[in-house]
Image 1 (tube, chains in turn blue, orange, yellow):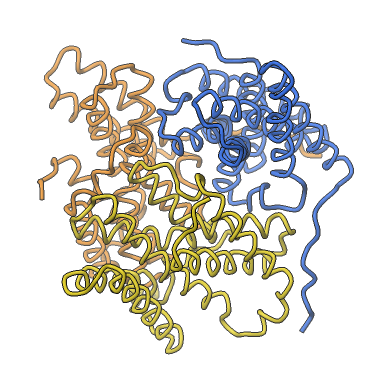
Image 2 (tube, rainbow over the protein chains, first blue to last red):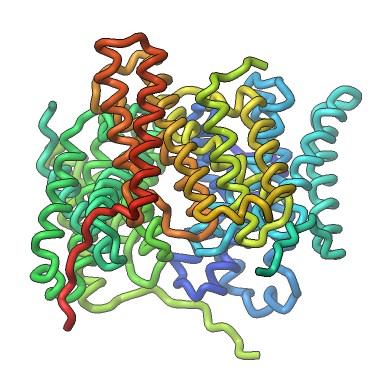
Length: 203
Length: 203
Length: 203
């Protein structure tokens, strides 16, 4: 059982927490909570691996499932404490988004993809895929389509990754991507920033 | 056109029936009923094949589609008789779950995967994938996340498969997996067993 | 950046428009509109490419994303004009269905698949996949399962493609498939044709 990187551990735990919290809110049982944690934590990587024709790392290595289940247990035990924080689901989700954007970009680059367009697309899909599956299964319109800056944060993070790579060691670029994606997402949550809507005529 | 195994025939017909019945309940037309039957009957295998990078067997072999359509025709002709049985959807679904858990485990083992964690995960995905797609397309929170013992039945069945393989011929292990998954699922339906929920504080 | 075929350009723009229009109707912001355009325009091809184990062409070639975004911009700028047309979403959707059925069939044939059953299935999935993802993400029961002739139009189009190929040059077969799928779908919309439902007993 290979140990996974710090960034991936952060991503699995925080996305796992976000899935578990949503499952409790939807009144699912312990099993449903565990599965929501698992799908949210591994979904983005699985989408990425399907697209690049790799066997999903999270199916090959039980470490991902164990960490997701740990996140589910924590969410079950401390739900009432955790849920006192406002926007707690969105905050865990922001950490997951940042972690999987960064680890997704690294994974894709490590597998020999180097066209910026491809790296950007796959990193965003890795970052947003788990939360999107979580929301589809919970019958919510996924966050990624909703009102706030979400995939835009992921996009800015990957651009920062690719630019940093020119000047800095790969590990630094990874953390810069994580930090910038997280910062953009949290600031947009805090300030309630979002893009414009189309003004529809009333008829 | 290769003939498929008995277990797969059972799985395609019963999952096909469950998809068709849900489609009638959702007031879809004949075409929608046929497609729901098809997706439910083939979805789990397609998910498995995508994950292990095989061309989906149900796309290569028209036998699956023909059997699914047959199930849809039966459901259309006898809907009013069938629907008199209570929990009829769940019962067909339980047979499909058991059949695809068993055939999924066999398929994965036959393709050279032997780590228990990988076999268990892929067998559960084969067993639960078709019903999950059915429910997503019908705008229901999928069964697999809901209150009763569902993927847990599939999990216990695969464990039984892997243990039986040590002592018994492969075909016996296949039927044991089918029987145990089905029994656990039907008993949990009958007794309305389910796992606990998180007690949320009223605030 | 390779230029894509006329049929694909038609498909990406019209499916992109249909995604963008649905996103405006669902009151999503500019970003959500762009993503809905992108997913609708590229989803069918991505499903096809995942099933035949090819790296998705729309992820390799940014032309698809650029055209989708162009469609989103047009939809945002002219939403109030466009939406005056009745059934505008269904009309754009019909063009996308026809274009992707034809381009999907061609793509699959070009990749060496020649069994009619396989070509038909994959062409229908290419034609219907984008709209299905669009509707799942918008929390609608997908069109393809709903009341009118939809995948049936796609099915008739592919049959026409395969028959025409026997007598006519490939390019002619492609346009015949496009024209017939579109005609069947538009006529069914115009005449409000649909398949029968199951008469459920009132109890």
